Image (cartoon, rainbow, N blue to C red; front, side, top):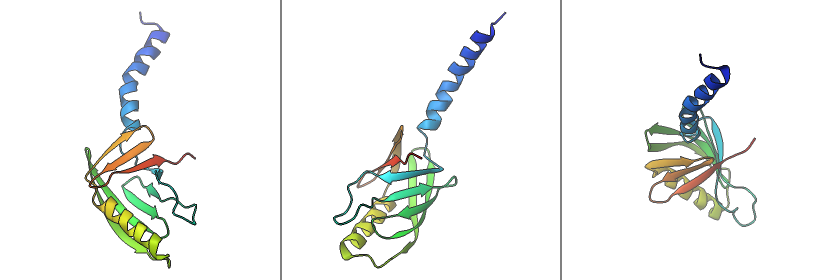
Length: 131
């Protein structure tokens, strides 16, 4: 007869690969911050909020907007939606445009724990925002 303790241990072992895979899967339903230093004269760092279906709310250096991630395996496509101008200084506006272009050019992704790396001509690293 299998003891209760052994049964619990077997269930835990069987659940481990699924839990590890979920932790390293694409971070749907997460808010993430770009690994970057703030622009001169600002404390703001871009972040993305990824919905359960891949919809994205962007808060950039100055501008903000929406977009959509589509994910299949390790392939990812980002399609930007409307971006609000918000009367940004030219340097921040250009940094925002460059970041949206870099997001639009990503092709693959990988995740290690709380870090999502979007890989394209320019790799972007985002870290899960702790709540």
